Length: 352
Image (cartoon, rainbow, N blue to C red; front, side, top):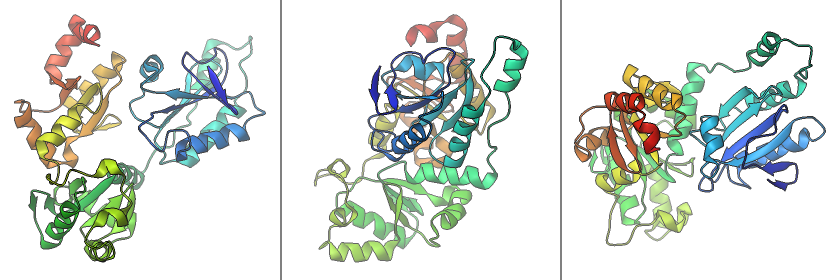
């Protein structure tokens, strides 16, 4: 273990019979990395609680896989709070509810230490006391929208797709991004009315297309046109895009096949499903998540309901007509029935 101020980098299990707060982070994720917003928040909490019995640890999720698996960490940042009985006191994914995280830390600090005279039942009653804030439908949509606008460094919400825009404004936005050789993600608002209406309130911007860079709204077509003029016909300098966001001058927008190849290799274990692990939107997707979690498999997931291009394209790409679809090391494993058989036979554990 290495220590930085009041936070220790953890590579093994946290100390037994002690209260701990863990931040799971990844080097490729700016907000969770040292100096990022999640890391700074964690540092602030650690400094505030420096005189308490609560210890703060940082865990690099993809390097310390045993801990990631043990606490079923599939996204970064994830905050895991552990009580003195070595049980999970609370687990918070992402940065959408800072108030809940702060309150949970406060509650854990104030939790009475377990004495030798307490029964196991009494300890469990304390551990299982409700601390989770139940998200409202509006909060769930807000969280989903935040994930969407941050899903690519440059993200365009439009009518249609880059290869088949469904309105003139969206087509012009595509042309400007393409002429500046900027690689970008896109979302067809015509496929999901909750996103279409919700994003208007989320960013207080009533029209489409909408362009986001690093999760922040840039604006619509008129703003893009002004930036093109100020940048002498090049959006890249005005958007302050990192070099990794450029494609060679001879290429255009990333093809669907290239995007699919990138997606299936985004994580060692990649699940394409309806909904997300925290909120599956069909029984098959829910079952396969439960199977993976029961086997303590750390995995990433993609919600095919948010992108019709990926949903239809993946069927042809892998010659597999249904969802969910599970990939390991970029190779298709199969759907729910196959994963069930692999779990029963022990083959999945061997493969992992």
